[in-house]
Amino acid sequence: MADPSASVRDGHKDLHSEQGGVRGEHPGRAANPLIRVADIAWLEFDKPDLGKAEAFARAFGFGVAQRTPQQLHLRGTDTGGPCVILRSGARSRFGGVAFRAADEVDVLRLADKTGAAVHALPEVIGGVAVQLTDPSGTPVKVVGGLQQLPAQPVQVPQVANTARAGARINATVRPPRVPARVQRLGHVVLQSTTYLKTLDWYLDTLGMIVSDFLYFPGQRDRGPAMSFIRCDRGATPADHHTLALALGPANRYVHSAYQVSDLDALAAGGEYLLERGYVRSWGIGRHIQGSQLFDYWRDPDGFLVEHFADGDLFDNTLEPGWAPFTATGLAQWGPPVTRDFLDAGPRAAGRQAVSMFHALRDDNEFDLHRLRGLLKVATS
Image 1 (cartoon, rainbow, N blue to C red):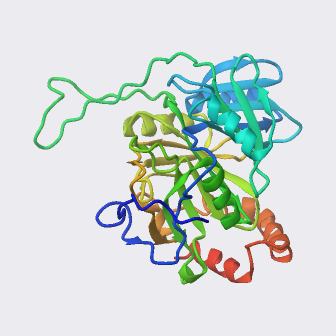
Image 2: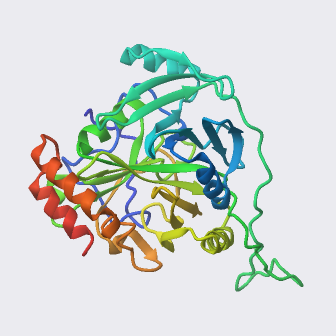
């Protein structure tokens, strides 16, 4: 990759990581990307039972933008397009991610540079798209000119009294035990057997930049094994990560995250989900990379989804931080990370063993040395 721009500043001193990069390490950005996407747009899934999927979605806090016998469009309260598009399918599977270009001109420019065709999106969504595939095989749309769904009423954050300032006088706090209203899609996490190749594709093609790198314990000399990647909006701050990418034994979806208003909404919404028999994977806690409050859940098909609030926002001047990839380093506070969240529990054991066997036989970045590093993560 080309050297990054010189107009970046040290992002690790008293900010978001105890370490920064050293000479020769991955710069975390491309000098001349094809375009710079503005945000994540939506995720696509196939589901065998849209009725069951809708019941969980409503309990999780989504609204429904469109429903047909074959499709379900889920939305947040923010203006914009859908957050998630569910399609009826024979089995539950992840179908890809869409990113929003700054404008339609960027969609046309990307099509010209990649040789991909521009096609019109369905009328209910509007706009145009270019269909690409990242080096891991994940379908990636870049979209522009979308119709804007009108904003919906938000879940108002609770008024807080602090030690020296009383904003709530003669009033109590009684957050209702209702679904935590999803505001928007925040990020998706993907695993790749060709991590570095795939990382560079997102930086070179979509103009994204790395906020933080993680490396396997004792393997910093082998390069990063995970990256938290944000959109480059120049001086306009963006989420700490819109995409997170990790090296692993399979090319797969890991989880996606949806913003809610505050801790009370997140916690009361979690109680609502528990009362209806849904399964918490891990939470409640506060992450280190990104700083967000988190609460992770399994949908009825086993896919991992996250409520989050109060995440970091960075402009494009911060350099990447570097830290070891450890289980204890995933949160500042909260319960210990669960084996279910790490995909290391009985439910995933057989699938993980098969994935590792095939990954070690194939020509990719996941070799025996990297396997040893990954196995150290859960115990470090």
